[in-house]
Figure: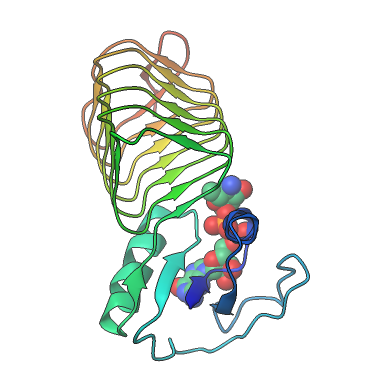
Length: 202
Ligand code: JB2
């Protein structure tokens, strides 16, 4: 039995991956104040308080890192077990490590000795090359490319189409703009954009 938490855009992508993998869902929770969701035409429950989740595998399908982190904490407190979801059309090396609650989308590639942290999103077409490490609750957006040995900290957003050159280290809580090319290390809590990427002027 699987319990999906969230019913927005990202939930559709995760649900699609689950269904492609032959999974049946036990339920979907959304915020009580959320508008009626269109979740691929499936019925969606709307409990305002998390139901008892004992014995259920749970996946938090929400893009915002802090919300995703918090809801995993709540789900585990309610007895749920974080579930990793990997689309059957993703390519994940048998020598890679993917932690609990992560999501790997269709056409993503995770190379050998790469480590994908808890609750990470590796979105469509993203490439995580060999020996990379992606920290907990980060989001690697569609069509990004992380060269070999790249490290990305926790709760980062690596924007769509960004490229991070091999061996570069990115800190925690970093945002990299879409299409940026990161050629050198990025300290925590910074936003970098452009080609080559540089700190965004505030
Ligand atoms: O506290 C919460 C909560 N906050 C938001 N509790 C619960 N149970 N659910 C919460 N949500 C739910 O997250 C909302 O009710 C809604 O179902 C969902 C957010 O949907 P939205 O479509 O706004 O965002 P998303 O996180 O599904 O997708 C974003 O991130 C993806 C990675 C979008 O930017 C997508 O385009 C992107 N691909």
